[in-house]
Image (cartoon, rainbow, N blue to C red; front, side, top):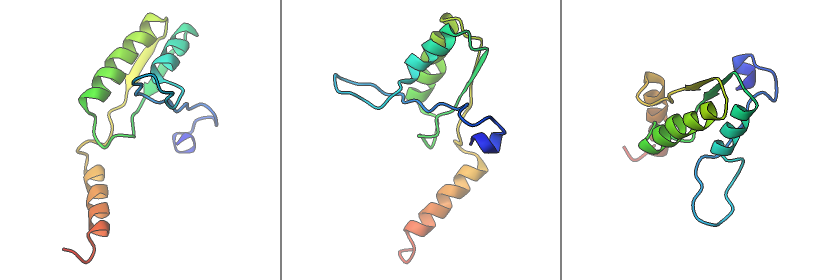
Length: 107
């Protein structure tokens, strides 16, 4: 992704959204990363959630609202939420291709 976007290697950070209960989850947590980036006065952050096929309420509320507030209130600059594939022609075509492969011989 860094290469395709023409970014320096190591400029992207992968974080994990959900934390529930007392068990250790994967990290770093998105909310903690947003607080750290904001405190470091990061001028801009762009966030995308490719783990979901479509933006859902959890994604929109937790990522686009709660994390935006955390980043900005900590001193960060512009927060940009990048909508995922949703109902784009490319996403629908990719799903169709995967369905045809999975259903080969059945339909």
